[in-house]
Image 1 (cartoon, rainbow, N blue to C red):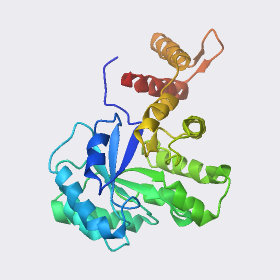
Image 2 (cartoon, one colour):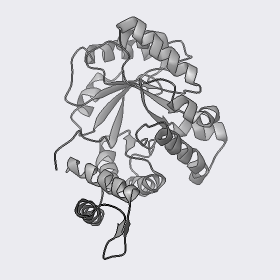
Image 3 (cartoon, rainbow, N blue to C red):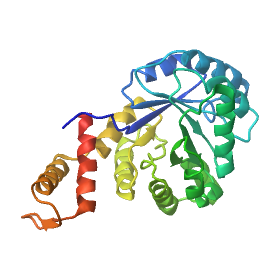
Image 4 (cartoon, rainbow, N blue to C red):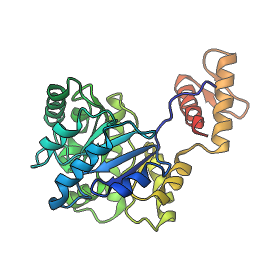
Length: 279
C-alpha cells in the first residue's frame, strides 16, 4: 500500500494565552493542535493571546496548527483574522458559533482581501439555528474544509440534560458534512479529562454515528481517541478480503463468509484500509 496523508483523528485544544502549554501540545502526539482564542481565554487576555499566537505562527511546525478565533459577530474576531490569516504557520481557522452561510462568506472575503488567499476554514455549529442550517453552512464557500459541533453551547441552547438528546444534532452534522462533500466531522470534546472509560464509550458511540476522530482538551485523551477510531485487526482483515476479492473479480459477488460485495462495500473497505496507514 502506498503511504498517503495521515487522516487526522485527534485535535488537541490549548489556550492561546499559555504559550508554554502550546509548546508542550506541539509534542504531545496530536494530529492537529488547535490554539484557542475563544472560550479558553478571558476577555482581559484576548490581545495577549492573539499576539502570542501570532508569534507562534511566524514559522511552520511539524504538527498542523489551527486557531479557533473569537466568534465572528464578537468584538475580537476582525482583529484575530487580520492578524493571523496570512501567517505561514497557520494551517486552518476554526470559526465558533457559526449560524449562517453569510458568516463563512464574510470571513473568506475578509481574509482574501487582507492576504490574497483564504486559509482553510472550519465551522463550529453550537446553536439550534446553526444545526438547522448545517448543509447551507457546509456548502457556503470552497475554503470551508469541515464542520463540527460545539456540544457544550448546543446543550445549553437546547436545554438538553441527557447525552442522548444530542444524537439527532450529531447525525444532522454528519449527514450535512458528507452531503456537502466534506470529511466526516470529528466529535466534540469529552469534558472530564479523568474519565477515560467514559471517553472510550462515547467515542464508540460517535464512531457508530459516523464521526471520525475527536477533539481533546488534554494529552491523556489522545491515545484513547486514536484507539477508538482506528480499525480493529478483525476489521482490517475483513476489509483486505473485500478489496482482494474485488480486484480479482469485477461486479457484485459474495465472499465465502456470506458478505455481499458491491461498490459501496468496496468503498467502505478502502476507507478502513486508508486508516491503517497511521500504524
